[in-house]
Image (tube, rainbow, N blue to C red; front, side):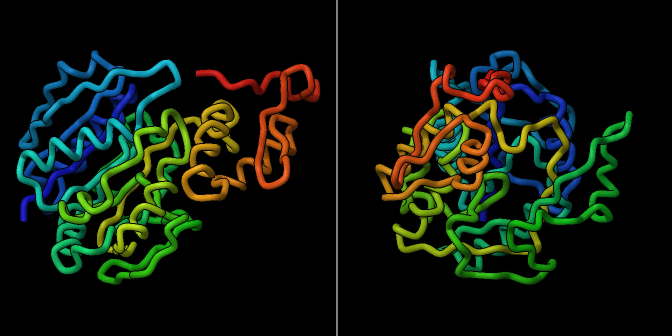
Length: 287
């Protein structure tokens, strides 16, 4: 079965280069590596050394933010056009464990009606020489909020609300059954949880395979992601219209505590700038 890896990118070219090296060092090379540059024309001249030559696509940005869902759909469409039977989507921050491609390919081949995810370890900041790809397995410490079966183990029937696009794989027929990610989502938040619901609605299952391990390269972030509060509110309303409830409630509750949003019945709304507590005046979202 032919296998493709799809990555969407805006900036973080160093992370992308490290991901490329990790894939090239794996026990199985993907047959195609599709990289989708979102509002990032500088990337289109990228020609890395090694046995894995990327296919580069360009997707323009939008006034509301990065088109993450549309970019992922474009990358998967290109992979399927190239003949891929198994498509692996890996976040640009993700380094592939040595068995990631082989592990996903096995799982999809054996159970093509399951959308598979693998454990992800969040790495500490690298040293001056970057991450030692040969030492990744020794740093394995998967994120505690997601299932983390051991290598060789699988779990099927996973909670769709725990689906995330950091690292997942599926058969071409499963992708067609879902229709892909909803492209109405733009900017940060919501499209992953939506896709988890879409998977179930399409009659497919979600599963976790311990043989496809990834490692998330460190970058600065906010918890909660206050710089994306407007995106989260917009995408949360969209999710509610599609599925009858709001996602990302943990973040919304923390935003509420900070005076950025408020709960109105079963919905949420943005708090106007002049209504916010003075100590939160510096938390307006930025690009």
